[in-house]
Each structure stands twice: as structure tokens, then as C-alpha cells.
Length: 204
Image 1: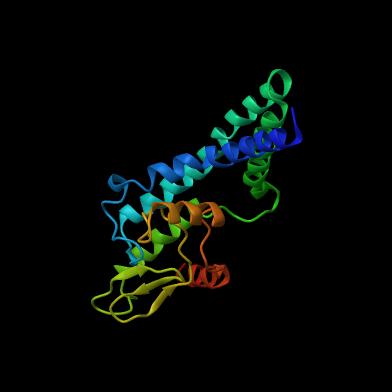
Image 2: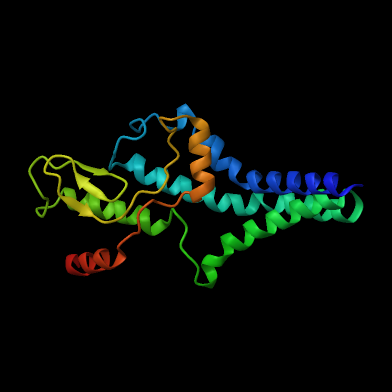
């Protein structure tokens, strides 16, 4: 086998294993039936039980990718041992990299784009809307890229940035896929957790 063909087999295996664990989050969440309760991209998303559920769904797909990644890892091992070595090594290397990137959270790495705490935080903000401490009489909280704002008085209710929520992008399906792959679903802004911790302690 020539160097060129070996390199092509390696790249092919690497790409397949790179995309395979991300397919559940890419294919399912971008479907029309999965976004009936949300405004089209790039409009802000109103806070609702559907939004909280979407965060939990995205969290599930995120960790489902970890389980799915063991499939190309296994095929890569089998291919290295009994089949095409460059192709199998590409599968094995890419899958191993993906698994390590997912497990780094347990070693002090960055948090996933979607967490249980994020869903709880959305629920806390929704509960505050119904309390006496609401910002205005006709409060209508919406989740923008940089945080949660009231669409009526424009007050910023929370600094939590919005991650990718699986909506089909206005510039097309493939741009949404590219963005998800490039950012791994992370928001474009950095969350200010300190402010949230202070607000939570004051509310208690």
C-alpha cells in the first residue's frame, strides 16, 4: 500500500469517527419536528418548559455521543488487528480523542455546553418572573446570545450565554452542522457565574 493511499485511508477513518458520535445531536435536533415550539433562528427564544426540556435533550445527546464513540473505537481496533491498519488507526485515534475530550470534565476541564445546572437556572429565572421582584408588569424573558433579557423593558435578567440549541440555522443546515462541529455547541460568550452565585445567595 502506497503512502498516499495509506494517508487517504487514515483521513477517511479519522473523519468518520469524528462525525459519527456527533450524528445524534446533528440529525435529530435540526429536524423540523424537533423545533415546532421554538421561533426560527436567529430570533431569541422565550423562556418556557419547552426550552428547559430542550437543554436537557441537548445534554442527553452530548453524553450519548460518548457512548456512540465506542463503536468506531471498537471497529478501529478490529481493523488495526485484522483489516486496514491506516483506516483502523484513524478510527481509533479520532474516537479516543473524542472520548478523552468528553471525560476531561471529570479532571477539572471545561463544563459541557448543556448541563443540569443550566436547566435549573432557567427554571429559577422562570419562577422569579412570577414573583414580586419581576422587572416590569408585562415581563417577557427571552434568551439571547449574551444572556436572558426582558423583551419589554430590555433589562438583563441573567448573564448566562445561550449555547447552540439545535435549531436549524437561517443560513442553512450545513452551516448549523459546521457551527456545531467548530464550537461543540458552546456559546459565543463566556458565562459570568459569579453574578449568578451572588444572586442565588441573595434570593435564599
